[in-house]
Amino acid sequence: MAPIKIIRLRPTAILPSYQTESAAGMDLHACINQPMVIRPLERAMVGTGLSIELPPGYEAQIRARSGLAIKHGLTMVNGIGTIDGDYRGEVTALVVNLGSVDFIIEPDMRIAQMVIAKYETISWQLVDELGQTTRGQGGMGSTGVLS
Image (cartoon, rainbow, N blue to C red):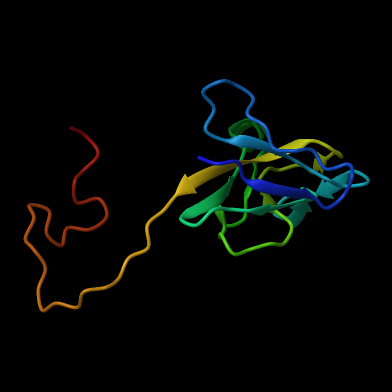
């Protein structure tokens, strides 16, 4: 993949980076001037001070950092956020504190991760019936929990 264009919207913004050789996600840092207190069940938009230009056919997924999620309950409001290829605004993390105590986001703190993913666009083919499968219309829980 070719390099992705990125702009620092603020001089203190830290570029996303992989923390290990095989990491899929790059850590995103909070680009804030002072600590932010996120109370239990409170939502907040945390800026990264960055804007990106993705190549056609790619998206950026903004995900929770697993350590912050399991230890403190800090996760993403929308599960996984999507940055579309035509978006040119600031990359932000939409966080929610699902923990039972206040969580403090410090300036430059690693608050989320970003995964760059290829996607396909589709077109719909309207038909009268779909192909048959063993599962058929069996919904949630229809395959059980044990093998």
